[in-house]
Length: 197
Image (cartoon, rainbow, N blue to C red; front, side, top):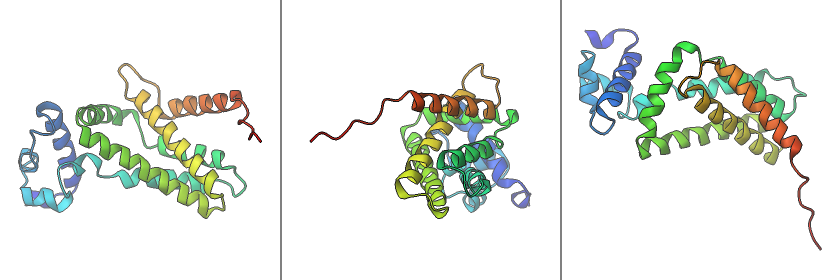
């Protein structure tokens, strides 16, 4: 009966992260994850296609947060202003209570090349989703791609700082700092090289 309790995916995710952190990702099986919370392997596979997905489940919520920011931007907002709104929307989902979990998850991913590759793919998929949403607002192909890739890069840098040891600032404050640094650097950039004839 325990397998039908509400919150089963979250319980499995928490158990998986704890086991990955203490025993190592490669040495932990789906069966062990399920058994550690009194569930069966079959129940685990009802929720996740494999043990890796226990770390990446819920990534659609991050994409949805970005899209809420994009969709909430005024129609005349520039692509970068729209991405800034998307970043603020995503940042609101990263509370101080989530930081210990995020730190542990990042540590597990950092120790495994296959998980690092999966994380990179997740970020690439996010950039594609944001770019598609910008294009749907009428932003041209190049601007949508550059703005979306830039926004995801800002998110990645901010996330890395947010989970670093000793960091206590809010995710939103860090996103704001990184985005301002980007704008400062862009303002300092030399003009694009002129085509020679």
